[in-house]
Image 1 (spheres, rainbow, N blue to C red):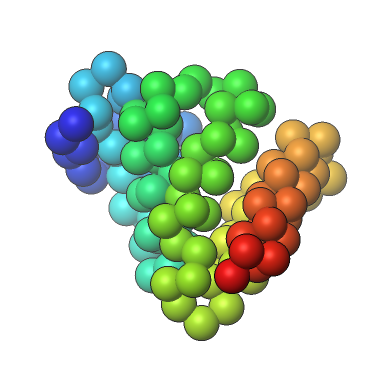
Image 2 (image 1 turned 60 degrees about the horizontal axis):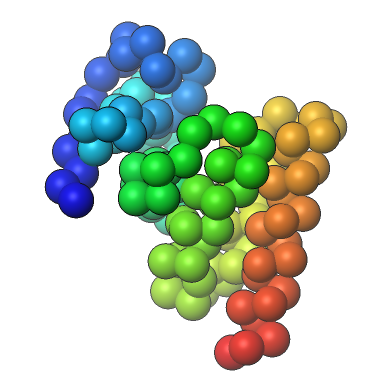
Length: 120
């Protein structure tokens, strides 16, 4: 699958997100005003998360977001110093604190990080 990256500040899928995707076309839309506020590692996580939605053909339900988070994590784990911590930290930075969906996504990624750490 070919994935195309488009910079667009006003794409309707973005709302207040640093990036979004159009699964049917394989396009990742990046909001440069928000995207470049994050570290290089976190930008990689964002892009891989959106790529995960395209590759896994997931939607925007909580379980879909958890799958896309996992896709990004699996590709970043062990690639840099403190990569597991950086992945977990990013969800805490990006998501609205205190929401049940935020807590669920962080818990799922934390479990994934523990499993990865136990295997390596």
